[in-house]
Image 1 (cartoon, rainbow, N blue to C red):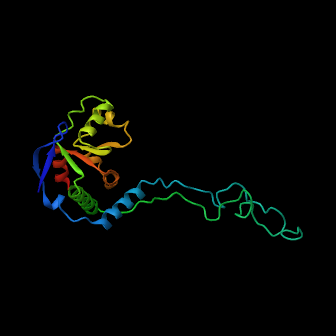
Image 2 (image 1 turned 45 degrees about the vertical axis):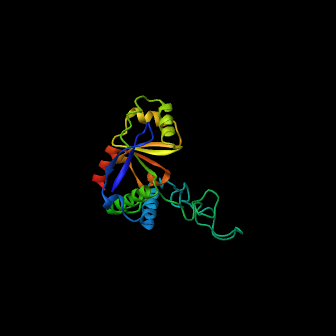
Image 3 (image 1 turned 30 degrees about the vertical axis):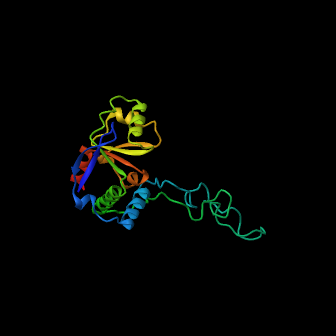
Length: 206
């Protein structure tokens, strides 16, 4: 498959790049993508919710009052959940929401997403990001304007400091390196702008 390379300053097709059909032309597997997205979001949960049960609260060592003759229901401890200040009946405990996802599944979901992006013409390949030479936000805004985009995910082989500092102030723009890519980051944006070097590295990984 040949993919057009768009000049990021003139907005025209200056060249083409040959990519593998086994990676960038596979059918879209929606159940697999959904499973990987859910697992990734679940793994990001902190899971630090915690409450005290009846054995964790303070007190409860002595019987509050005698068993009979008080006119009250019998009670053996102040830490009972039905008492004010007692423990929680079904106390929440710290837990992990992590779901197991194989490496083969993650790579398959990435291939599926990139293939669909190419079919929908939402993947833009540029030669490089050298036009962002200084950490200035207006340079990223000018790049988006030249590509006729409002929000996009930029993917480079290595996220440079200048590009990162220039793009971090824009809420609708994100810069990631190939090693930082995830299925969630790919599905969040309508358009993906990737450099030629990053595309080659991605082809080797997938």
